[in-house]
Image (cartoon, rainbow, N blue to C red; front, side, top):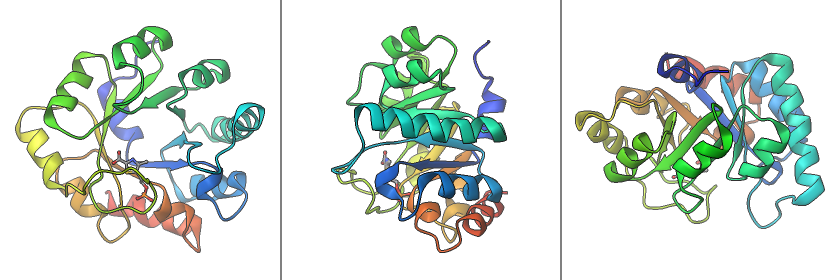
Length: 216
Ligand code: 3NM
């Protein structure tokens, strides 16, 4: 399999849903099925936080969510855990700045999708050189979901990355919802990534569909 093209990556990033058991009020598999029915384009399994599953349980839920993604042809990305991504033969992995360096991860995963979180122009440039397929830029707005999130940067951060020639596919993250998603796209992002706007919605399918509309 060849590396994903930038154009294909941009399409996949449109509505990037991230979730783990900790984020869900209901069965994660049901939430994912409904989000896919609403039109999400990419999924990340992010099993993180105080009550997150570990070991066998983490693997089992990953396997279950991956099977749902495969049934619907939605690529399945694993957050942070490169070994799990390889074990499951996931479609890709997403890493933060505090994880293993991106160039080492690229060597381990071959042509799988590699996403890297970037909070500054320098981090974005480095991710490009080290072989990222996309960068996640955030937090754009304030978020209650990530305990150690940095100060919100606003859509301006993405705008200034684009102005300074960063042309890698970009997804905005952090506090994005139906009301503000359009601003993120207008700033130059290819897509939006959300946890709570989908996970905590009363109507998961409808929320995913509205987010998709907001990115068009
Ligand atoms: N990463 P919500 S913000 C997982 O800034 C994550 O890199 C962030 O959750 C970053 O959509 C964030 O509920 C949380 O705000 C996103």
